[in-house]
Length: 348
Image: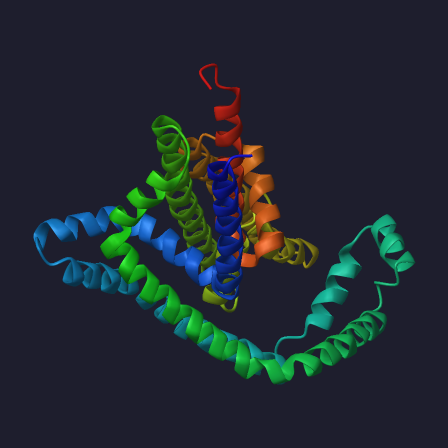
């Protein structure tokens, strides 16, 4: 083994070690780093337009773009959060005063079920409100024990969220300002042919933008439609239920149906036939249609991934990485498919 070969291997080993060490340092803030990169990619076209109007002032252009990001994201979220807190407080008061009695609603549903369904629920000991309350009490005790063990971490988690949010904004500013040059340096360091680097880079940015824009547009649309139909039917807390449907719509296929489905069943069981019919028709024909049509167009079309890959990678990503997984999962799946496409390419 020549001295030059030994030096190359030693350098590669050093490179691997310091890269793993750096990754370990960043890991506690991986979500902040990821969202900083994702938002920089998403808002980079806007930043280029701002930069054209502020030639020679990259710091100011990056700051303006960052403020626009905050205005687009933070202001709507603040307004929704205010309405959400108001409606959640109102529903809590109605529960506390007994105006909302879920036990009575449950008994009405049980009374309207056919005999075979009642027998099935009875075998599971789920037809009695008392038995159901006992099961819920058992779960509540276990949950309270878990909450008690983690109560001391609330302040730390809040502080960590604030720090992570600050890190994300700080990183986003510099990625907007220096992202093009940094991307060029990273591409130059990757030991692949230029064509392959271009393909992987294009796939990465395309999936980030398509997943973020597509899923968020689908979530916002389903939440808006769900809140509207709940308001039209006079259901208490339409903003609250709309936000929940928007959040759950990040889960493809099922999503918003976890909210409007039980309400439609309650309407049907209590004899409110036209409300049940309207909600079911609207849920399947409008809210569900948004997921079945809009998501493949906005996500699958741009990422060039089959619908089932988008579904599985989204669910798997959210299982592993939490809420951020709805973006991380499809990105990993897209890079996996693109990498194997390079391996199987005839000119590889």
